[in-house]
Every structure is written in structure tokens, then in C-alpha cells.
Image 1: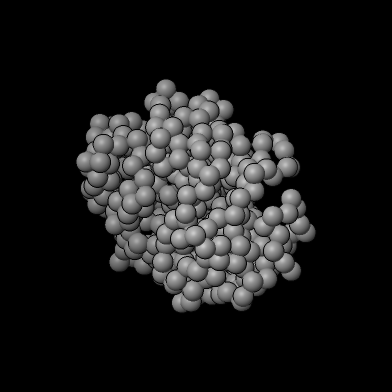
Image 2 (image 1 turned 90 degrees about the vertical axis):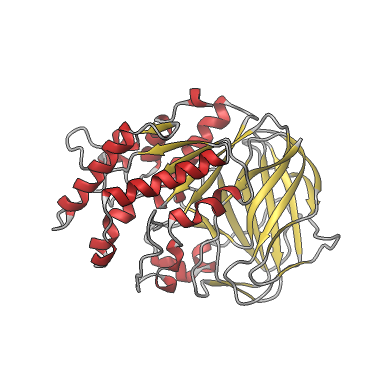
Amino acid sequence: MEWKTTWSYLNIEYGTNIGTLQDITQRTFIKNNLNGLMVRIQFSNLYSEEDMLFDHVTVGVRAEESELIKRITTVTYQGNKMIRVSKGDKFYSDEIKLTIAAGEELVLSVYIKETTAICSVCSTWSAKSWSTVYGHGGDYTERQSFEVTDSGEIYPVLNFDPNKANHIAGISAVQVFADTKSKTLILFGDSITHMSYFSDALIARIHETLPGEMAIINRGLGGNRLLRDYSRVKEVPGGGTLFGVAGVDRFYRDVYKDDNPEYIFVLIGINDITHPYALNHLEEEITYDEYRHGIEKLINIAHDNNSKIMIGTITPFKNGSVEWFEKAESLRKTINEWIREQTLSDGIVDYDLATRSAEDAERMCDDCHMGDGLHPNYEGGKRMAEAVLIEWF
């Protein structure tokens, strides 16, 4: 037996207050594919200017397709029921004796009484493998249900995004004391990974075909680039800090700090290709050689840490007509040709082929994106997941 992460997402650094929690219960449902006898929760208060105080935290389980939460147990830290997370801090709770089986959902409930400004959350747009609801006006952590409030009311600043996301504050991982035969797959990338339409479809497929044998961890970060730190965009909260540091710089930290994955899938580069033109930062243009060297760095880090790493082709993005499209598309095609031909990685996943239109290879299939020609929807995520060879595992 050993501690294995069953769920984890990256904290988004907004660089500003995005909402306030007061006298509210936050409840998160997390699909689990590990068998274990204990769990522990990672509390996280990164990128904040004040401490967070959790008055009561519980964890329970419910069977698939069931509404009944069973075995509700109070979570403590150093024996204390009330848990304070200092600004910039991150740590795991005490070990919680809680039997959990593959196919059961974890139900994590947090009550925050005092007014707390939130500057960072973990987010999903698909919200199939995990989702969060909020209840105003009391501690409902031991209740079966409560009246829920839309997260758009909780985090009004985030309504700038036309694609509605689902958020969790103060929590960034859950680990299970699991059977050592279980393995870990980490998905590393940008918004196409982060939004979770692909990862949730792959999670559903893996949970069905390999029950109890593999956990999938999402390490995507919207707007992230392989080679450059965050793009400066005044229209988004914090001016763009939410896009994070360059992928080559965050790769080791975000993949290996808490986990030792057997497998890593990389899908990143669309923002390196398009942001310099779309955001008028022409000084940040990249070359094919720069991209190739960046991916080679990731491959070397993975192999140095005994992980198998698969590289994904960059998906189509054509949508309407822009003057810089041909230049950006030419680079995408050159990069994809190299990805398909290179033998440095342990395999490739051809997301481009899986999602592109049969009539126009420069476009994503009409029923595969969210209306912008770039970000996969549920159908696009499903096709991407079907491009993954289960035989690898």
C-alpha cells in the first residue's frame, strides 16, 4: 500500500480577488478509481493575501448512481477540527480512516464561516469527473443535501469567461492509501487539457476498462504556453497571470512534486503558435526549432524520472479569416509532422487527426468544438480519448 493521488487540479493564479465566501458550505463530488483504506486531503491557499479558515471539513463516499452519502467523517489537521491554511501554504490533512473502492465517489464538504476573499481556485469546465456546489447560510457538511447556489454568484469576476466553469476553493488534491499495483497517468497541457472535456472522457474510459488500476491527473492550465510565460491580456482578471509560467519551467514542479507517474501525455503549443499574432505580441513569435527543443526537454525530464511520455499533435484552430492564419497554420503543420515522425517519446496521440474536419483539415470538425473552432466540447473530448491506445497501459 502507498499514497496515490486520485484527484488533483492546478491552482489558478488570478492575481486579484475573484469572490468571497462567508457562512457557506462547499461540497465537491469526485469520481474515484482507486481502492484504499484511508484518504487525505490537500489544503491549498496559494496566491492569496490572507489566511483561510475552514471551520468544519468532512469526507464521505457514495456509490455510483446513488444520492446517499455514507461514512461521513470529519477531517482534521494535527488533530484539530478547525483548519487554518496560511497564505501561500499547502499541506495534507491527517490520515482519515475511510474505506473507498473504485467506482465510488468521494464527497468532500467544507464549511467556511468568516468572510474569506478568494484569489485562486481549481476549475473544470466539463465537470463530469468532479463538480462543486455551494450552500449559503450554514454548516451542511454532515447533511445529505442542501439548497445550492450557482457558482457564478460566488465568483462574479469569473463571469468574464463565456464558457461557464465549475470551481473549488482551498482544496487541490485528494490521495488514497491504495494498492501499489495502481498506476498514475498525468495529462500536461493548456486549456484543451484543463477544460477537461478530453480528460473526463478518458477518465470514463479508463474507469470502465481498468477499474482500480489507474488514476488520471489533470495538469492542464488554460492559456499556458510551452516556451513563454503568461501572455499579457488586460481583459482577463490579473492581466493574464492565470495563464501561468512557461510549460518547460513548470513541467517538473507540476508533474513530479506530489506524484511519480508511470505515464505522461503532453498536448501543448497552440498558444505558442497563436498568441503572438492574436494578442499582438509579435516579439514572442516562436520557431519550429524552439518548439522542438522545448518538447525534447520535457521528454528528457520524463525519462530521467522513469516515466513513459506520449506527445500529442496540436489540434486545428481555423475559425473565420485572419491575416496571420497561414503563417501560424504552417508552423502547426510543421510541428505536427515532427511529432508524428520523432522517436524520442514513447508514443504519440494524434489529436489533430481525431478532431479535424473531413472536408477541411485546417478546421476542427463542426460538432467537436465549443463554437470557437478551437476548444473541444464533449464530442471533441470523446474523440480525443478514443485516440488513446488502452494497450499502452
